[in-house]
Image (cartoon, rainbow, N blue to C red):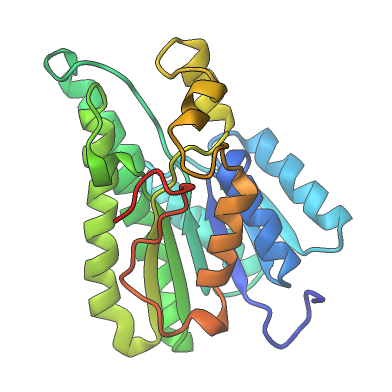
Length: 254
């Protein structure tokens, strides 16, 4: 679908320079949307945007820390100026940490809440006014299966992602009448750069061991998450809101 299709929208993806976020940028671009790649790593955001443009997709790469509300507001202002009003938001920016509960420092707890939950709050508040004006919007939050089943040694991470599931349901009820859908995807068993870093640090087992606990028998990829993101952001998904769509190979069935 060409980017000037009547169905083309402006999509903002946070954490869009790697892993599931990058895959989501590519999928939304493939579907004909203009894509703003937001990431803490500005060089990586520019790289993804350049690659999208090379494929004929209108794209913009911006460095932004989602914890910094003024920076978030500035980034969305740049997106509006260069691409147009924002009608799709995918919040994939996230931070992971591992520690026994009694060893979690207040600073570590706050940092995960700030990035994973408050960052999504900032971006949603920045995007929703455009969606209200259009009478149409799609928000997809990337949560985590850790929030569904609990994760020993990751209580702060699970709590921050659990907040996203509750936020999804609240916003879906509040903005459904305005034509805005809000859903979340809690991944599990997805091979990403963040997963590789956790494995290298000894916090996660090797791929083969992880795959053995997944009913389909293998890990997923960022493209698996992006396919679900693309659908939830489509016109066809307009009757789906407030939902938690597990993309996990069957490792969590709820």
